[in-house]
Length: 113
Length: 112
Image 1 (cartoon, helix red, strand yellow):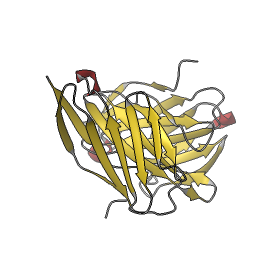
Image 2: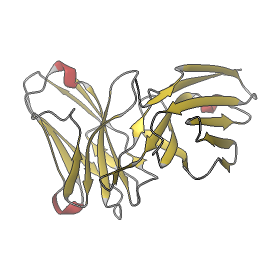
Image 3: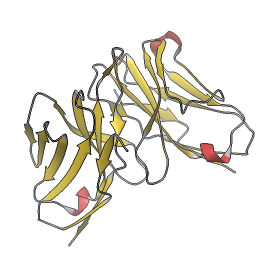
Image 4: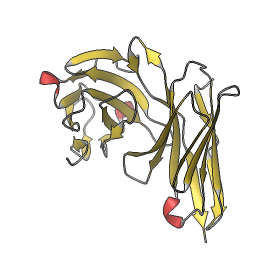
């Protein structure tokens, strides 16, 4: 199976909270990331979390990590139409001294008024 | 610093032609990565440089693909004898530490 799995779509109403979920397979994952991609653009790093943390908050974004279940989530509070994009979960682990991020397929977030 | 720059933004080429893409990382970043992204998929790792040394190569990187990073600054990715299956967005990223990668806007390749 895939190393990093995400649901493909999420639709929310403007002003509600969005929660995007991700599961990964490798317990040695050291860094976990959330990236945002808007149409035709590259990836923008939103936040990352070290595997020894279980939560990280940055303004409207909250990342929760359940290492036992290998589950990562991204909560966006007060979701706006400008948050509509594809969100990628990624993980990296030491491989011969390198840390090569592995990405999921992305969750397309649609925010409607 | 203007972030990671990639050139060109778009490239249309005929099957069988060679193409070369360029990536200029953030100047103090010693780590540089190339990824390929196709429609509906996440980025797939191609290759990784630390300074000028190419340390990792994916099995996706067939012998038609070659990447260089002379002097540990900019990098080039060349595809020889392009095939329609090479059509994708090619993304470059750089970092100083093994986290916090900054991506460029990508080069979209269309092979006709």
